[in-house]
Length: 141
Image (cartoon, rainbow, N blue to C red; front, top):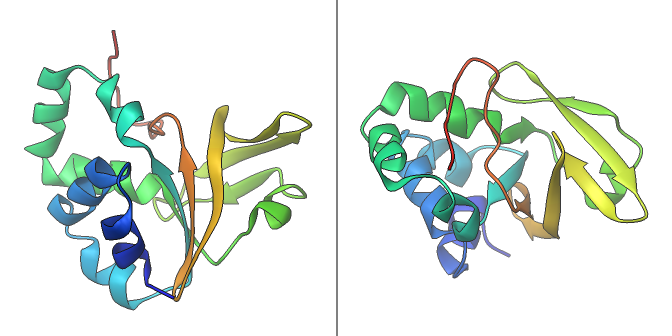
Protein backbone atom coordinates (compact mmCIF):
# COMPACT_ATOMS: atom_id res chain seq x y z
CA UNK A 1 0.00 0.00 0.00
CA UNK A 2 1.22 3.51 -0.81
CA UNK A 3 0.99 6.81 1.04
CA UNK A 4 -1.27 9.61 -0.20
CA UNK A 5 1.42 11.27 -2.35
CA UNK A 6 2.45 7.96 -3.95
CA UNK A 7 -1.21 7.19 -4.64
CA UNK A 8 -1.62 10.56 -6.38
CA UNK A 9 1.63 10.02 -8.31
CA UNK A 10 0.35 6.66 -9.60
CA UNK A 11 -2.98 8.09 -10.72
CA UNK A 12 -3.36 9.31 -14.27
CA UNK A 13 -6.20 11.73 -13.60
CA UNK A 14 -5.18 13.44 -10.33
CA UNK A 15 -1.97 15.12 -11.51
CA UNK A 16 -3.10 18.75 -11.21
CA UNK A 17 -4.02 18.35 -7.54
CA UNK A 18 -0.65 16.70 -6.86
CA UNK A 19 1.08 19.66 -8.53
CA UNK A 20 -0.92 22.08 -6.37
CA UNK A 21 -0.10 20.09 -3.21
CA UNK A 22 3.60 20.42 -4.05
CA UNK A 23 3.41 24.16 -4.78
CA UNK A 24 1.51 24.69 -1.51
CA UNK A 25 4.27 22.87 0.39
CA UNK A 26 1.96 20.15 1.67
CA UNK A 27 3.75 17.17 0.13
CA UNK A 28 5.75 16.26 3.29
CA UNK A 29 2.59 16.29 5.41
CA UNK A 30 0.62 14.11 2.99
CA UNK A 31 3.58 11.78 2.52
CA UNK A 32 4.66 11.31 6.14
CA UNK A 33 1.84 12.22 8.51
CA UNK A 34 -1.77 11.21 8.89
CA UNK A 35 -4.20 9.71 8.81
CA UNK A 36 -5.99 12.07 6.44
CA UNK A 37 -9.04 11.92 4.23
CA UNK A 38 -8.37 13.79 0.99
CA UNK A 39 -11.09 14.88 -1.41
CA UNK A 40 -9.10 15.05 -4.64
CA UNK A 41 -10.48 16.95 -7.64
CA UNK A 42 -9.86 15.15 -10.92
CA UNK A 43 -7.81 16.74 -13.69
CA UNK A 44 -11.09 17.18 -15.59
CA UNK A 45 -12.42 19.27 -12.69
CA UNK A 46 -9.45 21.63 -12.97
CA UNK A 47 -9.81 21.79 -16.75
CA UNK A 48 -13.08 23.71 -16.21
CA UNK A 49 -11.23 26.52 -14.38
CA UNK A 50 -10.00 29.27 -16.71
CA UNK A 51 -6.31 28.88 -17.57
CA UNK A 52 -5.53 32.43 -16.46
CA UNK A 53 -7.17 31.77 -13.08
CA UNK A 54 -5.26 28.50 -12.64
CA UNK A 55 -2.01 30.34 -13.44
CA UNK A 56 -2.86 32.98 -10.80
CA UNK A 57 -3.59 30.27 -8.22
CA UNK A 58 -0.33 28.45 -8.99
CA UNK A 59 1.60 31.67 -8.38
CA UNK A 60 0.00 32.40 -4.99
CA UNK A 61 1.35 29.75 -2.59
CA UNK A 62 -0.53 31.24 0.37
CA UNK A 63 -3.91 31.07 -1.36
CA UNK A 64 -3.03 27.65 -2.71
CA UNK A 65 -2.30 26.40 0.81
CA UNK A 66 -5.82 27.49 1.82
CA UNK A 67 -7.39 25.77 -1.18
CA UNK A 68 -5.52 22.49 -0.75
CA UNK A 69 -6.08 22.47 3.05
CA UNK A 70 -9.82 22.75 2.38
CA UNK A 71 -9.66 19.37 0.59
CA UNK A 72 -7.91 17.59 3.50
CA UNK A 73 -9.69 16.27 6.59
CA UNK A 74 -7.84 14.86 9.62
CA UNK A 75 -8.65 11.18 10.17
CA UNK A 76 -9.58 8.38 7.80
CA UNK A 77 -13.19 8.43 6.61
CA UNK A 78 -14.33 5.70 4.24
CA UNK A 79 -17.36 6.12 2.00
CA UNK A 80 -19.25 3.98 4.51
CA UNK A 81 -18.25 6.39 7.30
CA UNK A 82 -19.30 9.39 5.19
CA UNK A 83 -22.80 7.97 4.72
CA UNK A 84 -23.56 8.59 8.39
CA UNK A 85 -21.92 12.03 8.71
CA UNK A 86 -23.44 15.42 7.82
CA UNK A 87 -20.29 17.54 8.14
CA UNK A 88 -16.53 17.21 8.62
CA UNK A 89 -13.96 19.81 9.62
CA UNK A 90 -11.27 20.43 6.99
CA UNK A 91 -7.61 21.12 7.82
CA UNK A 92 -8.44 24.73 7.00
CA UNK A 93 -10.74 24.74 10.03
CA UNK A 94 -13.98 25.14 8.10
CA UNK A 95 -16.71 22.57 7.66
CA UNK A 96 -17.46 20.52 4.58
CA UNK A 97 -21.10 19.47 4.19
CA UNK A 98 -21.55 15.76 3.50
CA UNK A 99 -24.74 14.40 1.93
CA UNK A 100 -25.55 10.80 1.08
CA UNK A 101 -28.36 9.49 -1.13
CA UNK A 102 -29.13 6.67 -3.55
CA UNK A 103 -27.18 8.66 -6.16
CA UNK A 104 -24.03 8.66 -4.03
CA UNK A 105 -22.12 10.91 -1.67
CA UNK A 106 -21.46 14.62 -2.13
CA UNK A 107 -19.06 17.00 -0.43
CA UNK A 108 -20.35 20.59 -0.54
CA UNK A 109 -22.69 19.35 -3.31
CA UNK A 110 -19.75 17.96 -5.33
CA UNK A 111 -20.14 14.24 -6.12
CA UNK A 112 -17.52 11.71 -5.14
CA UNK A 113 -16.76 9.93 -8.43
CA UNK A 114 -14.29 7.38 -7.10
CA UNK A 115 -14.23 6.42 -3.44
CA UNK A 116 -11.99 4.61 -1.00
CA UNK A 117 -8.46 4.68 -2.40
CA UNK A 118 -6.82 3.38 0.77
CA UNK A 119 -3.33 4.64 1.61
CA UNK A 120 -0.86 3.89 4.40
CA UNK A 121 -1.61 7.29 5.92
CA UNK A 122 -5.26 7.79 5.03
CA UNK A 123 -7.72 7.59 2.17
CA UNK A 124 -8.48 9.49 -1.03
CA UNK A 125 -11.85 10.14 -2.66
CA UNK A 126 -11.89 11.61 -6.19
CA UNK A 127 -14.41 14.41 -6.75
CA UNK A 128 -15.49 16.04 -10.01
CA UNK A 129 -15.04 19.67 -9.00
CA UNK A 130 -12.62 21.61 -6.83
CA UNK A 131 -13.91 22.70 -3.44
CA UNK A 132 -13.65 26.44 -2.92
CA UNK A 133 -13.06 27.67 0.63
CA UNK A 134 -15.67 30.24 1.69
CA UNK A 135 -12.99 32.94 1.95
CA UNK A 136 -11.74 32.55 -1.64
CA UNK A 137 -13.43 33.49 -4.87
CA UNK A 138 -12.71 31.45 -7.97
CA UNK A 139 -14.51 32.42 -11.15
CA UNK A 140 -15.29 29.65 -13.61
CA UNK A 141 -16.72 30.15 -17.09
